[in-house]
Length: 69
Image (cartoon, rainbow, N blue to C red; front, side, top):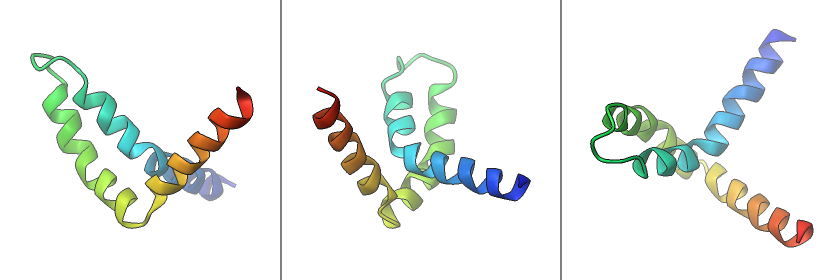
């Protein structure tokens, strides 16, 4: 059960990594956490894009916008 939960959170993190990186890049340039967050999220964003998980998230987001409006 714990392992399944770990996989779920890891997959959710990888699905949202590009959005999290975009949010971190929108922080003010003088924010103390901005460079650390960008450096930390870069490999996860790359992995998400190479495995096309980010495309799945984008498709789900567009579907949600169409069906909920």
